[in-house]
Image (cartoon, rainbow, N blue to C red; front, top):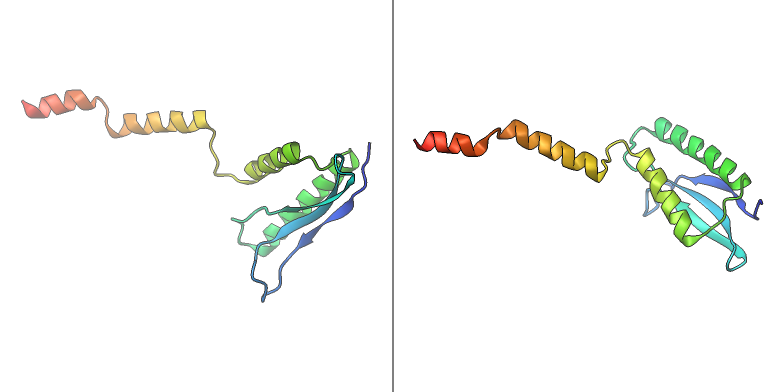
Length: 124
C-alpha cells in the first residue's frame, strides 16, 4: 500500500547558515496520527569531498523513493531503527561487539604473550 508522502530532497545549507550539515528532507505518512510527518536524515558526515557526498546522497534518495513506493510510512520505532541501520551501513569504520572482543584479544596476545611467565623469568 502506498501512503501519502512528499518526494525526498537534498538540503544543502548556504554559507551563512548556522548548521552546515547536509540532510535529506522527506515527509512520510504517520498512520497513527493520520498526517504527514517531517523527517530529516543526516548522513555521510565524515565525507569531505562534495562530489562524492552528492553522489552518495543521490543514491540514498533513489533507494528511499523505491522504499516509499513499496509502502514505507512513518513509525517512530521502526523508522528510527531503519535510519540507524542505514547510517551504520554508510559508515565503514564500525565494529560489532563480537568483532571488537576478538580484535582486543588478538591485540593483547600480540602485545604481551605469556606475560606472567616473562615476569617470573625477569625476577630470577
